[in-house]
Amino acid sequence: MNELQLKVLELLKEDARRDAELIATMLDQPVAEVKEAIAAMEQDHVIVKYATVVNWSKVDDEKVTALIEVQITPERGRGFEGIAERIYLYPEVKSVYLMSGAYDLLVEVEGKTLKEVASFVSNKLSPIDAVLSTKTFFILKKYKQDGIIFEENEGDHRLMVSP
Image 1 (tube, rainbow, N blue to C red):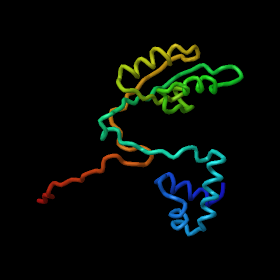
Image 2: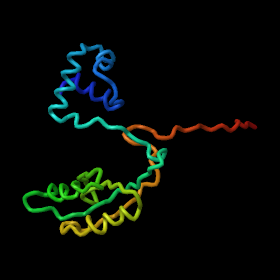
Image 3: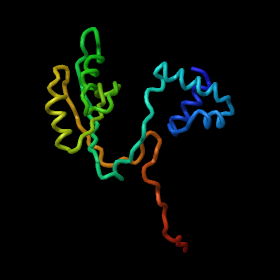
Image 4: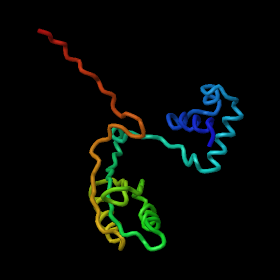
């Protein structure tokens, strides 16, 4: 990965709507080189998808998100890969991370209700033979995601009082 590609990635991560012409202007680079860098990163699956970050608390169609710590027994010959794949193939699962520490996988699940998420844990995740234990945490409010602050601080509007 070269320096131009890294700079392009940073600009696209900030705002995926930026086109090659704008990025080229921002980096003072030829448009053709920027287009070539983007195409190469898409081809190599460095850029996997262009996505929108949504503040679901502002939308009527709210979702329930849970983070689930999962302890598992690794499979002989495949380690954590097979179990992680089995888990991430469920449509409710948004992310799966291999972790260090007290648990092995961190699974992000999304559902319409608490009951739906709880049903996923009890009926789909927990029965997997390799799963030793789960611990579920429901997200109550997101303040910041992917570097984006959802609600700007309004600041302190009180008058200063001095003796």
